[in-house]
Image (cartoon, rainbow, N blue to C red; front, side):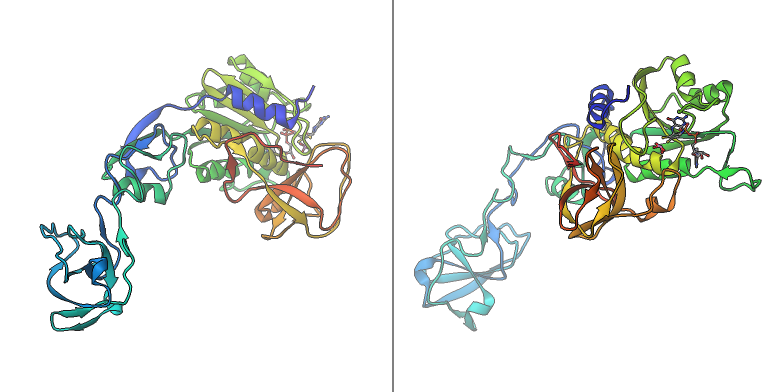
Length: 405
Ligand SMILES: Nc1nc2c(c(=O)[nH]1)N[C@H]1C(S)=C(S)[C@@H](COP(=O)(O)OP(=O)(O)OC[C@H]3O[C@@H](n4cnc5c(N)ncnc54)[C@H](O)[C@@H]3O)O[C@H]1N2
Ligand code: MOO
């Protein structure tokens, strides 16, 4: 019995372990997932400072002319106190002197020699950046389970952090099965075909932040499959394609089971990609995808991506959708949970009219997919639909329903 897409995702979630962690320099941490919270050890900004090049003044001196003989630069440690009827010239980022109540930007003053005429009104705290207004000492500024971005790195650097604990890179091993498959760098006979799935799996795993090992392709015999699997067993995730339906030489599942794989499901109620299987050998996750390129890509996006996110320790590891409208009317065959690839243009979504499980070109053009429930046979122009983006990561920390019905 096939499991539903939702059941399949639940099973993957439950049976996919999070990889262990390592400590690395922040410069190397881009795209990794935080294994612990980062707690601020000091306020940011660290001290009250000026947001403008201008004058440190007192509010009571508004609408008068004050004397200025001192100047404070960024990086100075000013041991001075501002007195009434005086101003101290100050640069952006410089610590404000004691007694300073506001900063007046240079362009709002009139300066003649040491005499500075101030505006009619001075707002208390104007143009002063207060210590801790960005991050308070002791607060959590990055959370366990978050992906490290360029901006997380900025925060870490601003706290003087050199290293952080993140989950290690996930090791993915990929291979295709089928005697007809040949690597793209060889000459082939007219009855053979190039293995396009394996390079696709490999590139996609890299895009998703994994380390990848290319096992190439295995023949259709049990022996050949067993040897390919054995050389992949040090991986965290093994992704294969082909050899999993009803054909006389479809031995993939058998070869994995012989090597100790617990099979958690071997069919999903999804079109295309019904023969998708998921198992585990110890801590290693195995996903057998169908050989048909479009079916394997769709189920990679649906299931492999979910497993990678879960394994990486991401808190927001569930698929997240965009709600949009149909660009034009679209008819499809009812009766199945169907995935349609298409293009989201920022306002509307339009599925491709030509999409068959063996095709490759739609994979390259699509940037999103839509999943319909069995009763749907037509999607009218303007109808609200939910889509899963392919080209960018949109994730949720709560499980979400992503079907269009
Ligand atoms: N009697 C039945 N036949 C089939 C069923 C079924 O339920 N009953 N399901 C069909 C469905 S749905 C799919 S999908 C395919 C899945 O088949 P396999 O996963 O066993 O894949 P293969 O038979 O090995 O190959 C299918 C197709 O894809 C091409 N292929 C395989 N690997 C690659 C690769 N690495 N790169 C490019 N192309 C690849 C292969 O040459 C075949 O054309 O089964 C249906 N049949
Ligand atoms: O999964 Mo198959 O590609 O549905 O025909």
